[in-house]
Figure (spheres, rainbow, N blue to C red):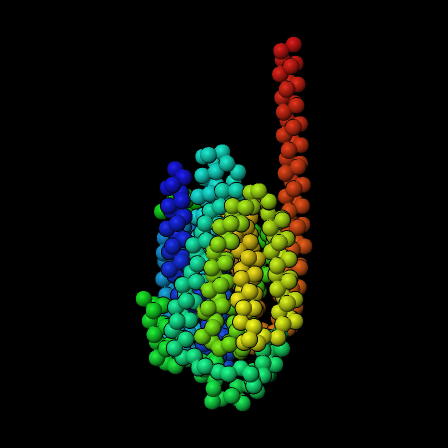
Length: 447
């Protein structure tokens, strides 16, 4: 029975691996690949803006209609259009395909999370194992395979874009506008004074673009009636009546803020600014590989350490990275440091992605579709905000925003853990009282 469950999880995971090998590679390159008037970042804002809307209206409706497996298949088709839109990007093709991707994203992620959680809980009940432990392991296995897409997608982009790389002597070049000091105004000034070399730093030739895009483009039944869009909306919004859901919103948004900063601002203000766009893929491979490995490790380790200890570790790592990025002045001579930051941040992200998804699934077991729709909704809000101010604020300000969201999210997360602890303690006391009452009744009957 366990082999059958694991086989299904592995099949779903490899489907996501193939799909996000293309999308993940494109997402990390957008701010550098399409820098004209912020087109790349704008496209990502549209992706997550539409993802917010689709997360509100569509997941419960579509999952109830066609089931988790077919929802995953149909939604994946929406992602393919985004690669096609990047062949000849402009404000029409890229924005339209970004909207299509966003619409498919909400049902895709909600159905994936629902499928993993349902499978984990069903197997736990059959074997008598702890639900949280099994669900954590299932999400750990999924993210082990899925996060490796960051390796293959970025490896492809790096090998292709490296053909466009110019060898530059770094000794006499100033990097004062890179890193935390990077601001939209300074970007404009730099582009005006380096117009002859811009293509080697922030853009690519059409031939390389077409090569890259060409490579990238190469049933469970639930009887719950016939829901409507209105009922789907009500279900998603009704979930917000649960105080635990509201308390988890900041931490969920932090996940979006952190990933948005890494894929947009770190790649542009640190990597592309100091090393060139052809290094973005190699740096993000480090993130993807580390994230993949630690997702499985923490999914298994959580049953021995508990969630709280691992979430505190994730917070400590993220805070350390933010402070270091505020202080560090990137320079090509410090090549190893460019890889250390994504490696460390991937450990934090592996904990948040794996354990927070599993926590949602077990915490809101009776309303999984609505809960995961809210998860993707608020994570997408974090992405949208991060991409929306990407071309407006300096990198240092963005780092303070991410730090603030992390601190708020962790405080409220601990409140949720306290509420769950108190709830379980009261339930245990009630069971003890019930058992004592039954024992007394048996004795009286015997006498």
